[in-house]
Every structure is written in structure tokens, then in C-alpha cells.
Amino acid sequence: QIIGGTKNVRVDRVRQLAPDLVIANKEENVREQVEAIAAFAPVWVTDVADVDGALAMIRDVGAATGRWPAADQLAQDIGDDFDTLSEAPLLRALYLIWRDPWMTVGDDTIIADVLRRGGFTNAAEGRTRYPSLSDDEFAALAPDVVLLSSEPYPFQDKHLDEVQALVPGVPVLLVDGEPFSWYGPRLAHAPAALRDIRQRLASRG
Image (cartoon, rainbow, N blue to C red; front, top):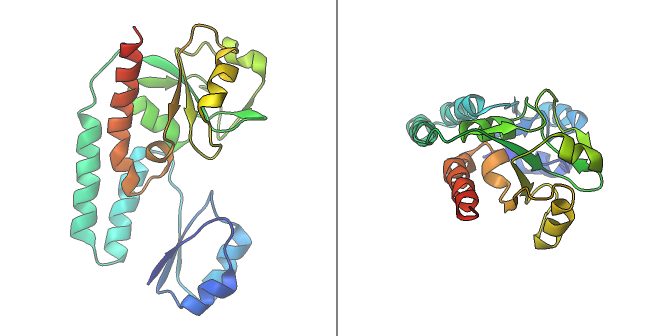
């Protein structure tokens, strides 16, 4: 039995489940909870910062759970699909993950790496982790496109005009955040998501 964690982990409940393996994440899980669980169950803490790391993690999980062939094939298929992305002209993308304050992604995140592989440079280049932005910084970053992620903040249609006012004339698109930041099997949907963004931009002329 394998358990994947969230930020709000009930350690007592995990103990009752008697897992053979607990998979935690350095960024998503609380250290004290992970250490408490490690006292009674094996814990594997993942730390993924780019696509290559995500593919390695998929293979490692497969090896640890006796599903190596399937995991290796999945990682191979995902990598191959990324390799088929066309070499379109580079565009500066500002990827927003939060509102009030505005927050974007730094160069050291898997989101930035996924974007790079689709021909999008990070408009917040040179920054790390998840920096906050002032309203005035939007125009200064000179993005070619602004992407509003569905998570962790649930951007919706009602936010489009608000962001558009900060970057007049720049396309503002809603995107599903899972393919960009969920670095397990959902990463398989990332190449298609990148192609979709390109198509949506092309259709706008």
C-alpha cells in the first residue's frame, strides 16, 4: 500500500493505514509531519525541479513499486512527446499562480522548464521559486502572453479583464495548471497543453 501526501496530513490516520511506502514532496509536505511518519513507515521525499527530474521520478517510483516496465514506458512516451514539439519562435510568457498578491514562477521550477520546452521563455527570468509582482511590474516584464493557471489559485473568466488592464494588447489566456505542475502521469498532457496555447495564440492573429 502506497500513500501520496498533501499538506494537511493526519499522521494518526497514516499510521492506521499501515502503508508499505509513503511518498512525500519537499515543497508540498510539512517537514515535521514527514518526520513523524518516518518513525513508523518508509518515506520517500521527492524534489522535482524540471522535466528530466520528473521523468526520473516516474522511473524511480516504478522501480520501488515493482512496476518498472510500465513506469519506464510512461517516462519514455512523455519524453518522446516533448521532443516532437515544434521549434516555434520564442515567446515571453508570464505564468500566474496567485492573485492578491500576484505571484508567478521562477526559473528553478518545473513550470518554467515545461514552458521552455514549448518555446516560451519565462518573463520573470532571473527570479527563483514563486516571486510576488506589483501591478507596475507586469508591463515592465514585457510578456508576449500571460497565462492564468487554474491552480493553486483558481483563475477564471472573471479575472481576464482584471489582468488584461495591466498588460493592454497582450493576450491573456486561462490554462489548466495540472499539466504544468503535476509531475506524475499528468505530465503526459503537457505537450498537448503547450500546443494548444500556440494554437490559441495563432487563432488570435
